[in-house]
Amino acid sequence: MAPTVAEPFSDSSALIDFVINQGNGVKGLSEMGLKALPKQYIQPLEERMCMTNVQAHDSIPVIDMSNPEDPEVTKSICEAASKWGFFQIVNHDVPVEVLENVKDATYKFFALPAEVKNKYSKEHSSSNNVRFGTSFTPQTEKALEWKDYLSLFYVSEEEAFALWPSVCREQVLDYMKKSEVVIKQLLKVLMNGLNLHEIDETKELLLMGSMRTNLNYYPKCPNPELTVGVGRHSDVSTLTILLQDEIGGLFVRGNDSDNWIHVPPIKGSLVINVGDALQIISNGKYRSVEHRVVANGSKNRISVPIFVNPRPIDMIGPFPELIENGEKLIYKQVLYSDYVKHFFRKAHDGKKTVVFAEL
Image (cartoon, rainbow, N blue to C red; front, top):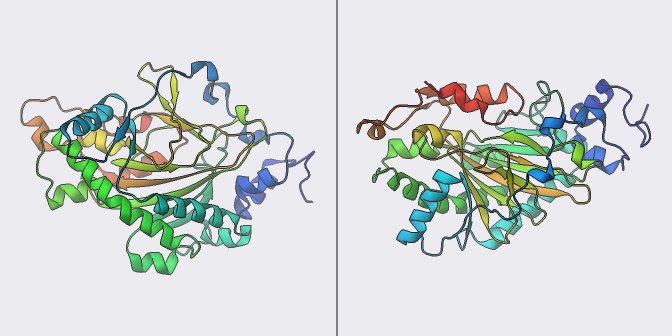
């Protein structure tokens, strides 16, 4: 029996079938014009965003990258990575048209019929490197998140042309390629801040040996205050480069741990955040910080993060140079693929993943 607006899903298996198995995602739910949020998406009270905990007058740093070698700029980047874990960059080297093209391509992918998108789902995709999905890890979550995504792990241009959806392939590749200049600039500055002035090939592979780009779609939501777009978490990356649209909805945990700071959209900017891998590699000098996305009751939102990661086969741990001068070791060496598996084995749970690497 087809779901109706009044009685959308009599049981969870009908919802899972519609959203996951048939590939409709939450976009399909949103387009039904539901009057109430299905109970499977209602988050426990402690996971909902309480707007009284938002620091209205605080904001993460915005850094002008027009002269990335300027000592004031490099100091601002290192301070932001140490204190906030998040910052925005403007006047960077990624052309605005590249950003606009990848946003358009994101809308085009999610506008495809469910049966086309479903070819890229876990059950049907010809490769683990291309994955269309919904929520975070539906099989482990007590309450689902209001988000659909396409995740693209970069191996080579040949593989991308063979496997990635044609509607967004070239735009994502261009976005990744043009962002690489900025990624290298940022990593050079951050390594200098640790007194590591030479990034050899081994270090570069450890910092940015693999990349994944996600296209995220957050459709408008009935009762947005009862659910989340993305729950509290920190990223497992070295760095994340995030393109967000003009809607807003990303919140970062403030230094005062009970409060959250909105990251306002700035046209042409990119949001940069430190991931767990960089926190571990820097022995805690740079901080990966919890963040979350709220659902929106009136507008669809998209975002496109590039996750800059070590390779799955890499052992990650504090760089030896950092502890040669007697600094206390906080983290052990862990296989990066084990760390990532640990992250995906559970629902979003704030900063708990990094405990996996603590001594």
